[in-house]
Length: 598
Picture 1 (spheres, rainbow, N blue to C red):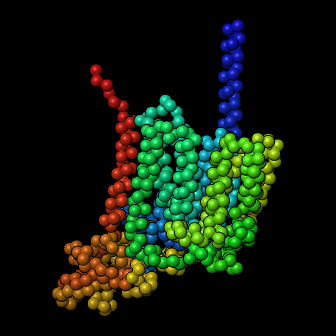
Picture 2 (tube, rainbow, N blue to C red; picture 1 turned 135 degrees about the vertical axis):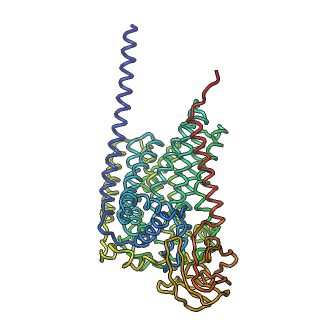
Picture 3 (cartoon, rainbow, N blue to C red; picture 1 turned 90 degrees about the vertical axis):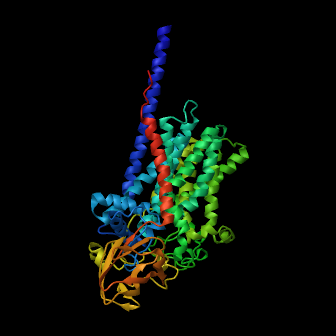
């Protein structure tokens, strides 16, 4: 009798192992398919030498600046010394620096800026759906639901618009978003275990990793973070409710620490971005009024794929604002699903689907012109300029809703039929979105430094990155040095974030010196003949640098300058560093064995 029990026990263990292996095989197979689809959709990124897009050339110019500035020891990135007609501009102080750090890092291997950009474009087509799959698999424990959701996240028209038409680093934020949610899900599963101590190595490491990914998300794209933050907060509350984490005060405190840490680790960027914006036209410029760029309902359902721009009104729009055929089908199915559940009074396990359904509805409504009163009420969202930018959010919310919806459907035949139809529509509906247009003149990209007109441009529409006192951007051919208003012969030598200029002066006297350098407060260290010039002498002269009443000597004089971190930038740099160091120190302490006293 005992041997029978042992035999049945061993056979049950074998079956469990077999089931676990089959689940792993399913997961590996799903990931493999997503990788192949990612390669298929992303292969157009490697178009030689480059492809036509709205912002691609500007990102090449900025990337070249980032690489040179970092090589000069300028870290964190703030200043691009050759943009704005060689006057310089604080471009990295205000715009999504993570993208340029990645370009500079990959360029260490490739030594090719264009290839580095293409690698990032291509990689996101693989990484984004894989981590979306892993997140949904963690949340639903259903491989099919996770796979279909990930498929939706890959085959969304706005993804191809971001990379192949706009080349906007928004795609990087939507790549990191599922990674962050996946790490958050792992954290919740650890907190749920009763035997897991908050002081354990594993949970501390997971907390640190989640905080760091959250910080990377924040610096990946300011505007995307602004619009997805409400969704993340509400989803966090839902997770706390579902997992009953609110009953554990220590766990709740740990979650707060992680949220604060994510903000702190990224504070080196968002702190100066907010506080120093007043020193540029970003604080006052309204280049693209949001109320001129609402897509119509018809455009959201179907609009021709184009490579031109969004123009005021809707008549001459040259780009597509499609939500996606498959995405609309899922919205219809979800509506039918809710009506059916309400009629049958079956409300179990509805919360996740309901949340992503209503989140989708809210963001779709915000893209409709009827939502203008809300835009007027919530002024910060006007910063996104184009309401159709919310297509990125709906691409995420619909994909999430799809996964949870597939998990909730009980009729297997209907489920598989829907999966096949959805799969077909997702791929077929995006068949024309996977191509690019090769640039007309390859020579411009072989010698981008000298031939491309955007190499030394401000790289922003309306030059809104320059000083409010500047009437226009710097002229590339403008003389570098003026003394008392007169152009003076000089010999400048410069890098990206430093330089010096020699000139001869007839006699010892005081004079005002104008340099062709963009004014930005508290970032210049300037020396005259080896002695530091007081900050009170560094003035703003219509957006350029004016050195007031310098004591020049007879003969050769030398003025040198160095871009440094402002006092505000230094504060937030140290603030971020302190949190990162504290976490690192804590993890090191946990891994160092403590010898017990005999």
